[in-house]
Image (cartoon, rainbow, N blue to C red; front, side, top):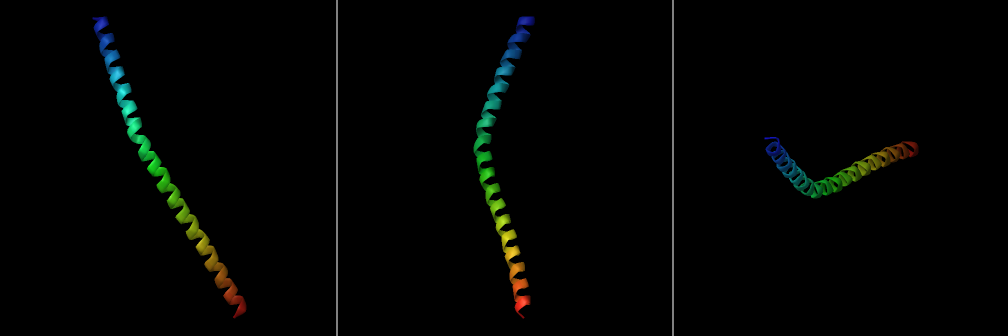
Length: 66
């Protein structure tokens, strides 16, 4: 009986490890895509911040020269 349980456990463990490997393989391209999209979003946010700073500086310069 114990041998049978060990065989079942080994089989289940092997199956689960294979499943885990398959999921990791499927996850990898998704993570790459996520990182690229996050970098783009971060760059857009940074550019919006810079734009806002430049608009404020422009408004201040216009007030000084009016």
